[in-house]
Amino acid sequence: MDNDAQRKKVVLTCVQPTGKLHLGNYLGAVKNWIAYQESCECYFGIVDMHAITIPYVPADLRKNVYSLAAQYMACGIDPSKCNMFVQSNVVGHADLAWILGCICPLGQLERMTQYKDKARKHANNLCSGLLYYPVLMAADILIYNADIVPVGEDQKQHIEITRDLAQKFNRTYSDTFVLPEPYIPKTGARIMSLQSPDSKMSKSDPNQNGTIYITDDADTLRKKIMSAVTDSDTAVRYDEANKPGISNLMNIMSSLGGMGISDIEDSFAGKNYGEFKKAVADVVVEALSPVRERYDALVADKDALNKVLSDGAAAAQRRADRIMSKVRRKVGFVDTRAK
Ligand code: TYM
Image (cartoon, rainbow, N blue to C red):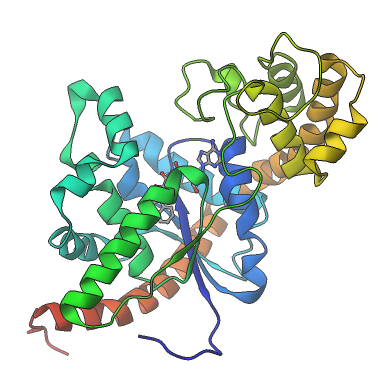
């Protein structure tokens, strides 16, 4: 185990390349990674191997990988300060997943909430990769011996199983892995659909008016926010149980605009929902317009994206190799390859 107290903390986190980032991905995850780049050794992955656990089109996957790299950068991820890489380009993730799978109780995987949700959605087309998904995610984290994993609330259970597997490996084979800590932001960790504020915002929402994409243009953003579902009350007040739509909009405004929830309540006292929604739309448009402009320029330069991802994968591979050579030795694998 790395005991050097002076060393930089290692941060690892990833997103699936399954389409455009939505506001939940941005506020719950990517926006919070930016500060870590200044003081930590950061690895930001594009997890294409996770993305093939549900039906997909290979050509779209290819396009989505580049698109996600450009979106990371448009959001403020700076490849000169971090390592951005594609998961399948770093050898070792799947190997470690296999090793961890061999100490992971099957029942624990069957109980994972996201697995149960996705298994229900894909009942006619359920692959074992979906069950194995959290083990691969644990491998993504442990192969870099990450200290911190910044994620939205829906990933909490996956970080817990990662810690369980790290502990079990350490007990079985001797100390190897750091136990990673999740970083889950206070606001923005669970952004809800604008159309059904009882479910989280997601790319696969059948009603796409409920999902704000970071590359939506200003008109689309305004339309989606103005048509957000609210309630029959009139007060702009935070109450997740009884006013989930308004509370969600308050969370969005607070996370993007920086004002506290009670400041929002004070400034909209006596005002109607229409005025409040217009103010939320202004904050969202102001925050996302520059992201969209940067994205359009970045995604057009595929050579530059290839260079960023190839440098990132090389750095990630160096760290992964160091940890994997210890892992292989400890589990008893011999290495007969020519040195
Ligand atoms: P993914 O691609 O579904 O989501 C990427 C990140 O966005 C967060 N997020 C949200 N945050 C707030 N509100 C929402 N509505 C919302 N929806 C998504 C997620 O919590 C996540 O941080 N399993 C992961 C990908 C992954 C990973 C990893 C993450 C694979 N290996 C290793 C961290 C470390 C996933 O599906 O994220």
